[in-house]
Amino acid sequence: MSATELSDREFAQFQTMLYDIAGISLSGAKKPLVAGRLAKRLREYQLTSFSQYLALLAKKEYRHEIQTAIDLLTTNETYFFREPNHFSFLKTLLQSQSRGPGSFRVWSAASSSGQEPYSIAMVLQECLEGRNWEVLASDISTRVLDAARTGQYPIAQTDNIARHYLTDYCLKGIGSQAGTFIVDRLLRDKVQFFHCNLNAKLPDVGLFDIIFLRNVMIYFDADTKRQVVSRLQAVLKPGGFLFIGHSESLQGINSELKMIVPAVFQKPKT
Image (cartoon, rainbow, N blue to C red; front, top):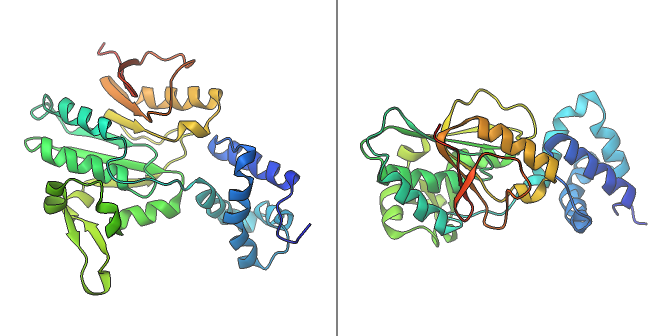
């Protein structure tokens, strides 16, 4: 076995670590991903095996490295206006919310590198002109959160953004920033990013009109799903909505949430 090959035993230890910390279940098919993403950390510390890296993670003085490993293993592909039906439903919903009391609050609970919360922000800014609104965005990966806060992306990622949103809310990079675009500061200032582990007690985030929890539950087992949905349901306002990924389901979860349209669930109003 070569020095940097990931053994089944080592992979099982990483599986246990990720499940214990984040509630994420890695299938055996993810073994090459784990080996590929963590190999750079072995090089960083001049280690010759994944067992040595696991031993390093167990040392108190390297606790910060656990977050680095989590960052590398939980980063998922995302893009602007993913699952367009959700944004069509959101627009329809907001037509009756423009004059409501208080601030309209949305939580993007697995925000990754920011494309989802910024997409939400564009729709809210367009539809809630007469009302205050805010978007909270969280992820377990601090690395993607740092990238998300910049609001800057490759120009190729504009493909799914409607032209009027590009005109109103995006700025094309020039000079050294050519080939990129940045989300307008007006929106960046209204999207608050924070680190959050959905598999642990939630911070005091208040109540939300809408929570997006998309394309993350596919990595949870049934018990973890139930716990996460229960935590989020508790911070959803009566009558509020939970959006999940179209490839996901709440089947088997003892929840009071009722499906309104595919992958959109509503909490009872009373």
